[in-house]
Length: 129
Length: 242
Figure (tube, rainbow over the protein chains, first blue to last red):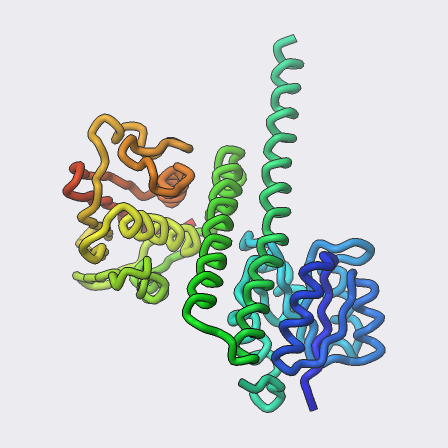
């Protein structure tokens, strides 16, 4: 079974491109355009991994992390933050809020894929070369 | 009256600074999208067995220009923070030698001409009080310049743990810096008169100087046009670190 990833990103162009990239690497991908929608999809499908932006309308990445940590089911799902914010204090803040990893935009897919593999663990890797 | 004017100009400067910070951050999402499209095209061409040297080379070029543009945006953001006093140094006791391994890896095959960074370490390692992130940026900027402004030999970084201080020299055999330009070298947006035609913002050395000063270090430069440049960075060993 393919690993299931929830992508939360408010920029439609980036969301579509990342979805295509991940699907090309054999992942099953759910998408959401803000934290609130992401929370709803995560609760419904319990994905294996969440990749989320920070700055988003309705519910931002910080609040999303707080909501995940407060929910016993969601708290087990690793959340990888991918954000343009690259200041040390921003990274420290999201790690304190329970993020499993941090990727600074812009990133190359190879780095994103390494982080995905690390967070999913080798047994769950869906990608095939 | 004066204080009103001063307050007004402060607000204007603060607003301008915020605009720069927001704009710089906003640049990064389209850059990420463009680079992700390059990655998508690369993956698709590989999956369909259509990748060839021509596609590979030109897709790589797009990607490296995206990251060059991103570096410029980062430099603008950093200098904006420095000029507004928003730079914090999270200083702690650290061995500067531990920063060299990732830098060596980063510059292993840069800039695609077969050269690499040569590193020499002498003396017994001893810790200084500094921000590892800022020092890493300092060394990265100086090494990047050494590659960018030279063409023949490998740039050399020498880390020397002396009795009372640690001294880092970064040497290249490049175009050098004209003597008349040396006094202004660390000013924001200043570029040496012989650097025309070589990409750059003129912010890198200004950031280097600011970070070294924030960490109570010192930097000097010796340079001769067409012979090369040596930057020397010095940090004294501290009694305490606060």
